[in-house]
Length: 273
Image 1 (cartoon, one colour):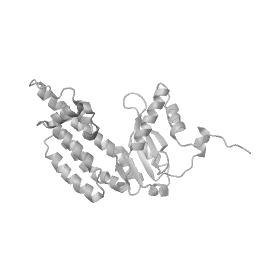
Image 2: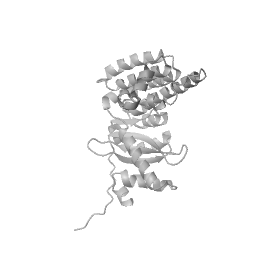
Image 3: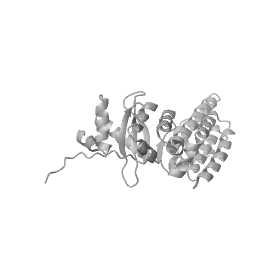
Image 4: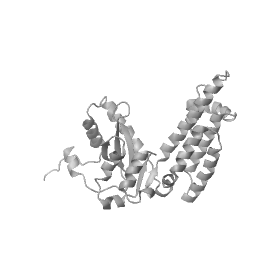
């Protein structure tokens, strides 16, 4: 590991993914910074403590001013500390930050589930249990619903339920990502936002307003076409390391294991001829 870290070049990636990973139980996180270069597997560039503004600034400060200018795109969730760190350190960050589509859809799924829970409680008081056991149904995209559940979801969708309206808005938002240009995406979002605000669904309206506040960094996706898919894959890889080690007590060992397996380091000695 020491040999590999010593050989690591100072070249900065042009495309970066930022995500957090839980080290232990509770809100105990580290920040992962990944290099995502076309034609190459994603590699972990840096692991820092916590998921604060300082966590990400610690990475940006390792780069020279010229290297920060050369960064083209940074994918991340809507997490203000990461965005603030990037705006403070990376010139032109407002045009480079890309809020990850998968995380945004997760916010919409959470909104749908909040609507379902509230409506289920209200219906139960009236002796109506039609939403019982339906949580997973509403989290599927329509094309991914298992055959055995398709009939039930179709029947529920056809009823005058708040949950079915929330689900329809979630599914419509998925179509947003198919827009070919920034201009078409902006127009699509304006229509979707108007429908969401008129939905009278509090959870959906909260998410819609959050999206509107961050719209410019959502629209950057249509310029850079960058997502956090590599970071999600890396999270799964790290989780497998945690399972293999039966957990970590030592934080430094945890970091070194990640870099050993996913840091893209040249670990082997040079053979002398």
